[in-house]
Length: 215
Image 1 (cartoon, rainbow, N blue to C red):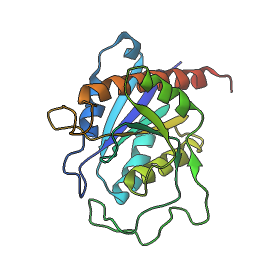
Image 2 (cartoon, helix red, strand yellow):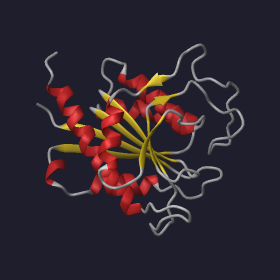
Image 3 (cartoon, helix red, strand yellow):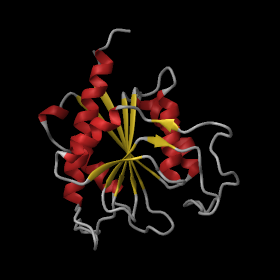
């Protein structure tokens, strides 16, 4: 049986957020040295906060690496806890430009479609994060910006024949550049790494179960 492959992604800075902690978080998770990670191939990628970049780079990444699971991180600067998103809304903002200064002209991603669900595994990921001591909560609202858009495209990919079996999106709160908690928050960069590791380990278990299941 081939090794599990997990694709982990973050986002770069965007208008209104000159610092985004998710690239450093993804890098830390890719480089963690644990026996449990020895048989796992971890691929890290940072998306520009651009609709065109997501539509161009996500299919290329999936085709090149054929990951079994996709673990995505994004910044929710006004939130003071960890959010495990349970769905992607069929909604996109027409007000805020992306990093390419592009505004979309439609308020939906796929006209007439309903919200797309990540699946029941979100409850297990939330529980795994909470066990590290972090304030982690399930969320039904991934926003109307690039995080929600990537979530939609990722769930879409899980429904294709050769796509990842599982996808998850985690919104993290803002931390200071030095890794300390942001004013008004108690969550540091180290807390995010601990929670991210727990989520990754749980996602690996779920992906392995799917890989072992008879066709």
